Length: 339
Image 1 (cartoon, helix red, strand yellow):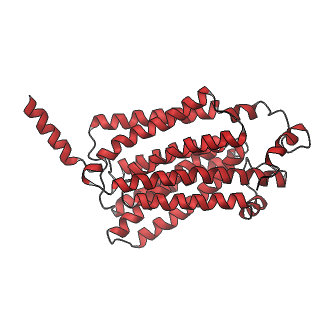
Image 2 (image 1 turned 30 degrees about the vertical axis):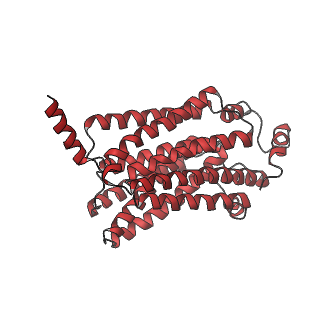
Image 3 (image 1 turned 90 degrees about the vertical axis):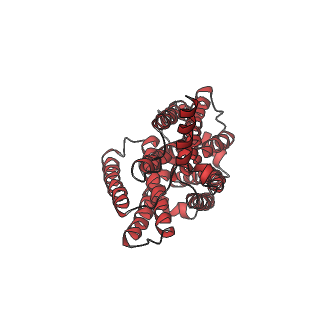
């Protein structure tokens, strides 16, 4: 009996790649965590910039940013600083993707949720409630449960043309569906739609970035790889637009919560089903992956329902925003000195 168990353990050990057979993964993890820190800081600054532009233009951007609002954002110091920080986050993430599997790197962005929540609580004065803290714990706990096992069982291999075609085809369908939903329902949609949409697109961005890096490392930079780069840029642009609109519809930590769960979930599903990064994982590990993802999604939905700032603003829906009444005056002192 003991011999059988020992041999089974050896068979599993031969399949593992993670921290046992890929020491570079130990560099990818801290790089991904550094990217999460820059992401949380960038989100806070960008949210401040969007709020300030809404005040200056006298119009909310909940149904989409106008061209004038986009132009004002480009010269708003706080938004520019936030964008630079997000640029640093992308650099750290790309560096992490170059040395570690996608399904390990992408979920680690969940640490940004904790940092952003603490920052936003200090800036907005909305102290996190027990329900919102529980929701944050579910988000982060589910993600780190997933990463703990992914770091052990994740595998990498050269990405083929068929796999790239599959990713691009799925992305095209996603963009069509999101675009149609935005055109038809944008006047009734709030932050959660834009957060989920941006998270889906950014999941493809991370996947395409990983595919491009993989192809370059294996000397396979050809026309389809160039198409991947173009699709990556396009998905990033649409995702960025969704994120800025989400900032006008909800608090930054809700935006980060959605991105740090939906983004890695999409990237992980593609990494597992299309790129085969979980090929070495036994069935019971796949069950843990599913449970961890469900816990994280439960946390995002809970945060969307019980976030103190969301609850506070929902009680003021009968007051017209942007008017000269008390609601505008109550908000002005906090943002008067903002950038």
